[in-house]
Image 1 (tube, rainbow, N blue to C red):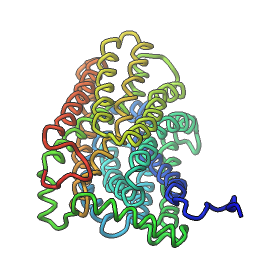
Image 2: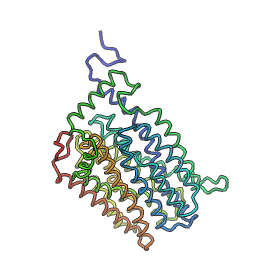
Image 3: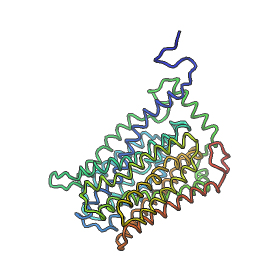
Image 4: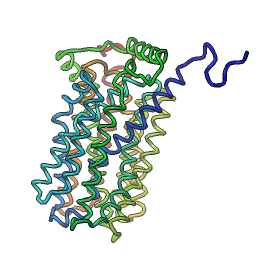
Length: 444
């Protein structure tokens, strides 16, 4: 009798079906959560088109306020990663989203620079721990062959947030209700979804495969077995405070943390200032500026997906990361060189976006392959924490340069230099030890 068309034949490998089920169940929600996270973090770049004029904020005030988010973020980043690892990713993410949604909406009620600084700082505190919690969660649910692809789909939410956030924010800024200007309504209305999604995450996500009632018992057993086998083949997981300190001193952890600092300085400086750059060289209305500012993010979105697919297909992380970071640095340098020709500069900005947004899934897949256990969670939090300090430096540096009378070409040179340094630091990971592999000796 031929096998039933509705179920796989006896003896068929269940792996592809289970892996696809996990991806379709989890990735769409994780993607939406990160879209909202990044939108609430960066919508100030669109709000600044009108907010700075209404409130009398100088470029330096805006740059400091945009960047101060990251100072709040780093204070709770490592504790947040450890809480997610040892307690519950599901509950921790729900708490994060509800609190940051309330604070993001509160941005619509600021009047002074001091209030601006405090709300951005508190928003960073509220969101701290979200990203490493998501990295830990993906590591718990996706086998190694799917990890870079899952990370690519998840991290493409950054680009998607800008692609979607530009037009949405532009439309919301046209609202004129109750005598409040549109930029205030933009902050208020874009903060609401985070609160609702926090409750969705609490009831929809599952912390571990063994707890997933939406998988059949045999499927749960298969997935747990695969993940255990990979964990057994990987370097032994280390635990305890001493192991965390040893992890923090490992050359590759330090190099990746430093590289991420410069990469995030570039990404944050670019994201927070691009709408203002376009406004300074054009006479376009606000809505048109938000649309144009979304264009590079569209290229970054595609680059993330392609890079993640290629990295998983070839099982190679290092050269993907180095090549894409180098492409980003080259594109920004050329954008600075041709800044007097806006169309050509925008073309090179889009080329740069392929690199500085496309590398992120490969970068994190590179790191997670030799970080395990509590100390690994600590190291993930450390790398991301150091990186977020770069998120303060990038926006503030561009605001400082702008207030000193420099045109934005100088800012793009600064961003290109940041990516060039990040490229060199990632390249140096090959010199610090043997090639990174989940099967290498952990003493390397």
